[in-house]
Length: 274
Image (cartoon, rainbow, N blue to C red; front, side, top):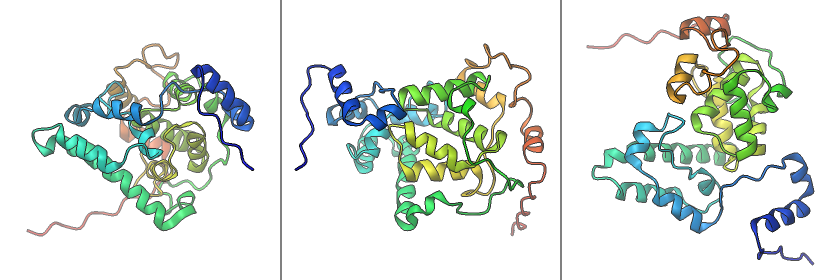
């Protein structure tokens, strides 16, 4: 007969020790315990702090007014409809909540795709559009350990492992670096994210990786230093030993030529009718 797990603990430390004892394999693979609280009470407090209008204006900045609701949505503590309705009640004009509601809709879309294709989310949905055919199967250790020498990439790696969370923009930058600069298969990065993210949802995670890789979009996503500095207030570049000659220097056209020299040209748009 299976014995129910304990539910009452004198302290958070006692709870953590108990979980490590009950799940030794998981503890060995990732010993970090994120500080974010679970449960309905914590979820409701986070929901009350959401500012939809500010979210729409600042969500791409690392210090922007993001919701931090993703873990509660992932584990069913909050529903998409509940967050949508709350957001709409907080604004005078519905348009002020449009960006937040739109992001909830994307999450719903990923889930619907997942329900349709199941494990197909681990396979390329479309041919890759980078012009490259060879990608490594394993994620390099220097990325996993945060030892690439690139201040931004190493900081994102540490934050992922230590907190179980990354801002969505940081996820995109890190994914782009792994797939396009280091030429690693997106599946390796997707597995790494799922190993650490508190909100690690196979649908949102994998299909977002495919969007970056260009197997679920019309072109690969990449970035440059100017873009990264704009949305991080330059906090990584200022102290980076590679500043001025890192992998992300240059205009988008220059980086694209370096990364994808054999990328097929995009088909010309049909002429517009008058």
